[in-house]
Amino acid sequence: MTNRDSTTAPTSPNSGATLIRGLGLKEATAANVVEMVGIGPFITIPFLLTAMGGPQALLGWMVGALLAVGDGLVWAELGAAMPGAGGSYIYLREAYGAKRMGQLMSFLFVWMILFTAPLSAATGAVGFAEYLGYFAPSLSPLVTKLIAVGVVLAITALLYRDIKSVGRLSFVFMLVVLSSILWVIVSGLFRMDLGMVFDFPPQAFSLSKGFFIGLGGASLIAIYGYGGYNNVCFLGGEVKNPSKNIPRAIVISILLVTALYFFMTTSIIGVVPWRDAMQSQHVVSDFMEIIYGPWAGHVLTVFILGAAFASVFALLLGYSRIPYAAAADGRFFRIFARLHPTGRFPHVSVVILGLGSTFFCFFKLEDIIQTLMVIQIIILYLAQVWAVTLIRRRADIHRPFQMWFYPLPSFLAAGGWLYILLTQEWKFIIMGAVVLAVGVGLYMLRARHIGEWPFASGPMESTAD
Image (cartoon, rainbow, N blue to C red; front, side, top):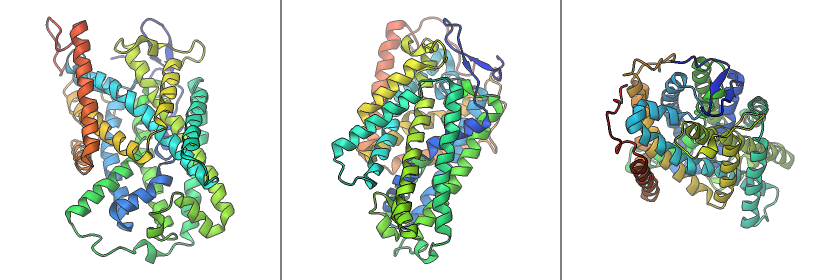
């Protein structure tokens, strides 16, 4: 195995250029946190409360946190063992066999990214534009969508620079994000009414079918809010000392954001009655208005908009490295393998994903969230849980970090993902299945044309090699 903790990481075999390992623990954690927070908790608290019909929806944050920890340890072990640009593209390819089923799995991952990266970025941009409605309630739907498009274009321009500059911007954005949430939490601590927090409706905890379906919906919203703890894995080729900093960044960011989300939601429903919070489009700003007056709602809204902007920034930063890694490996369109001649970042990938995101800014926010999660569960998350077990069978993959209490975190992650998937509406599950089926079909056509697995002739390597 090569020394993966060197100051540079290999890129395209033909270019001779390298990615720069310029992200330390501080910057790597910041890249996770800004993507995890962003606009998520500020717009999803009403969705969370609606899913379960009351403050018992706080259970959604707890279930989501348990799933994030279990799945985060899966990412940590894989990321420390194979810290290259592209994240899951590398993990799935190597775990399932680089000359066998790993070819299909890595192809499906890149295929999935063509949907999820632009849709994820659009989610943050649309959330930004809708929250801007706090200042201008008369904005038409079309103008709101055009604002979202402008946000994506501005972020694409910011990402068009070297990784060290990007790392510094991530840390600044993290300070904006944390300042916003801490202001909400501290403000609520002195004004919250615990009676409102525990104002549960009748039969709130009856273990009925409706309760578990509602908890599944709340958990999906929660894990969407936690999404981003894996962002550092997509930047693995640019992280200093990745065998230590990748697991640390994942664990620290999950624990930090879990505490922030739980206390922020508790603070809000301790001031804003949960029945009102369910109906609010700007619940956090409404919360600040109740405590301090309109000026505070306006100031916090500016902070929220900054957090939303930062999350899309971090998301496109991480995802732009995935098509690059696949192309540099000769398994995707070669144009994505190009690095900027001076900044040495994958500029083609940044531009194409950024421009692609503008199209999806015209979709409905709630449907985007559910579709994103279902597609990722079906194609990526369940497959990656098994990948940890597969790499443990291989002597040629060094694992500097091993998940604690293996295999319990794997079981927790797999069970959690299946539970959330099976409690969603069938239309979203069908959409995810269609994306998977089309991806498999395209891979088979391509594999037959170029003679790859399962159409390759001659001896093949074992998935345990």
